[in-house]
Image (cartoon, rainbow, N blue to C red; front, side, top):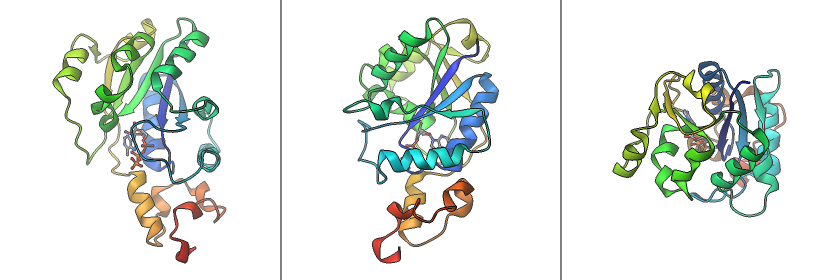
Length: 214
Ligand code: ATP
């Protein structure tokens, strides 16, 4: 069975950087990829859009293709979205099916600040997606943890349920939700940084527009 890859994030809003790297990861890994919006991300400020608004944007973004799907389990859970809890829950459902946690290079560099971060490897492999324009230096702790886990052949991730790390060189797209929120707040129209479905209904991007520009 193909591995299941999870791509978590705030998706505030989902942008073409997310979609492109998730798509390429599914090709490179030959895996089913699910986008998984976080409820209350433990590492950062609360999102601008509500969970329902973020799900609506993700649904609009995923229209017209079948390779990337949505997993809203973290939004249904009370409290902070700790990835370790999500992976434990999924492992209970998946048996020995390989599970891959996809992280952008910036998120991966911050891994040692996550709850029970070393334990994540008991439940999943980690796939690190290259991301331009960010500082993604690894701490010594992270580098040592990765040393025995690093592989370069994606087929190895099909043979084990968890425990390996692979770096995926995806097409670099210097797009961030922060920049998109800034552009929208300035009254700009970042049309080709976002999936076109987000422009069908003007109320979808309204949470990001400065009030006097709405
Ligand atoms: P923000 O600017 O609000 O921090 P973001 O653009 O980084 O948002 P998130 O929803 O926080 O988006 O990211 C979810 C995941 O997607 C993270 O693992 C992040 O590293 C990754 N990611 C986001 N944008 C890109 C990109 N352009 N290339 C590669 N990975 C990305």
